[in-house]
Amino acid sequence: MKEEAHANEGDHLLAVLAALANPHRLRVIALLATGGRNYVSQLARDIGISRPLLHLHLQKLEEAGLVVSQLELSSDGKALNYYEVRNFAFPLTPAAIAEAARSLTTKPEPERSL
Image (cartoon, rainbow, N blue to C red; front, side, top):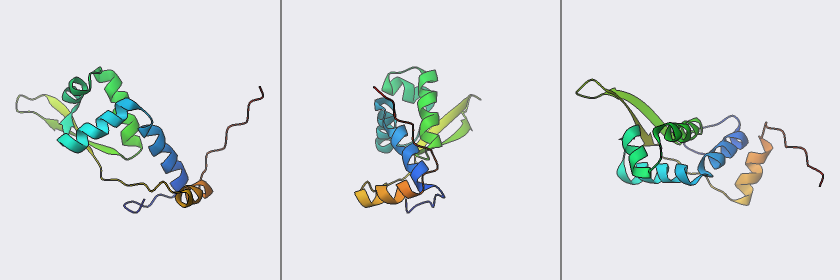
């Protein structure tokens, strides 16, 4: 997380991993990384999901800091929300995970008895 300092690196790492733990969100990142910035309707068509569902996935990716959006007006006056992937790299070594775990603010879930 060298690009941006995070006060709670452990919480941020959890948010990133949760955001990437979905095939639709991985496809969004892949499309934006290979095809460049794009607007919601086109992304939904390219991925093959509805715009409302895509919005939920984009929101999760944006909250994790993996994509950014910008609202623009087209030449015919329509508002288009463009998304682009941010440059990111997260080392997933045992040492990096141990370091991130020390800064976690989320409480572990209680174990369930079987």
